[in-house]
Image (cartoon, rainbow, N blue to C red; front, side, top):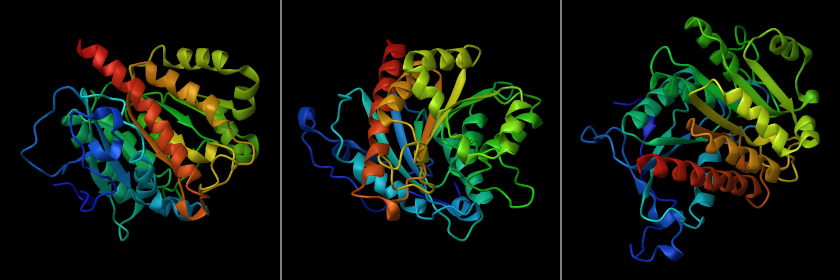
Length: 334
């Protein structure tokens, strides 16, 4: 039985629709609920996505950010429910519930998320994780890593203004340490940690982090200004170069990467963030690589949002990423 796990007991969706009338359908009409602790479940055939929430911003609090991301999963769900259904009858979308344990440590919750992700992968359900703070990332990473062969590398692309490579020996894990935890985990496997960060803001990262990156093989980045100056075609070539020798990819999107004009409801606001339209081109290109095995969106903080702008933007990214992932998966089944 999964720990700290709760299937949904109330609906953010509206599930009344004639199955033959998909032209007017919305996600909220067709999302089904699933209990990962149901022992009768067998691996599904076909294309299946599963939404799971990670309801914790403890790492944000430890990292002195603006708390509120614990409410992110439900806010994003409410926006997802309004999206038009473009999958036809060939894709199934589930909401499997939440990892939610206010009295447990972040480390314990990360372990619980990892087990839930492993369970989803075993059922042939592609995980879409809704954070929560960016402490979400390490649990998601561990779950994906455990679903592939022990000797296989799991590459990571992080859309983020921050490296999140801070040491955690004194503070413990928090929202700024997840990728350092991944780096250290890769070391235990005698592997290099393949990590690409897109959208770094120099004024949001201290020199220690830039020094650590410079000395660490496998880690690369482009600043937000680099991406703006280079244009999407050149950035896509850089992404292709990073992915050339990789088979499996974990994609994570921190909403604080985007300008506060587009994403005001985040844990750490960003004045010089990326343009979401440019980011969407890059995200679709990454999804089209065929190597993504899980993705998440984190740091949506509804108490600081304005008219649900940030939650809606997060839901919109999910809409477009899943379209590409579904097309790839359906083509692979033919």
